Length: 222
Image 1 (cartoon, rainbow, N blue to C red):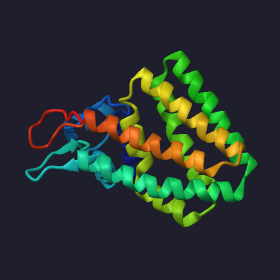
Image 2: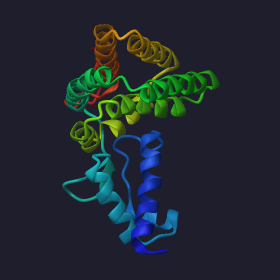
Image 3: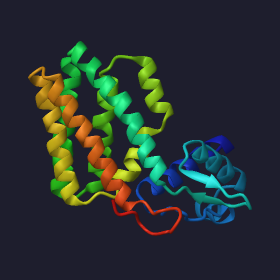
């Protein structure tokens, strides 16, 4: 297998473990250990880590070494603010275009989400949650907006955080998603916008409770 293919293999393996929280924040990623574990060269591991650092999933320390990047309170707040700007804007455009295929897709994602929660497959529910928001962006039909959303790695960030949610959180998420879909069916942008805004605000509040305070090293209780 070519070196770039091996690097992609390593990238996919480490990325999957980070997003599933199998590699916790602050965990050190030792090149030699991963090269041996995955039976690849250190060069392939290094290329994978550089790619992951570009997605802000890992970071290189000032004194060397590579670590799983910790999510900070500032990250949570900034991403929520960006999501509110992009997703509410996309939602407005989605109402304008009224694409029945997008509505059908959102309904299917809601059904998938419900099944995943019912089966206790919460990582699958997290994936469905991310797909729901990506589909709203897709429904905007605005390629520049879609590019901004993708370049900001919001989907990766959202998946990493949503994987920390509890069962009761998923039930609320399901209700909010379905509320947005029902508002779309009724052509009521105001209700859909209010639900989406509260959805993002609630997610921000819950995640801030889980993020360690950089100054004290303890969790923030808001």
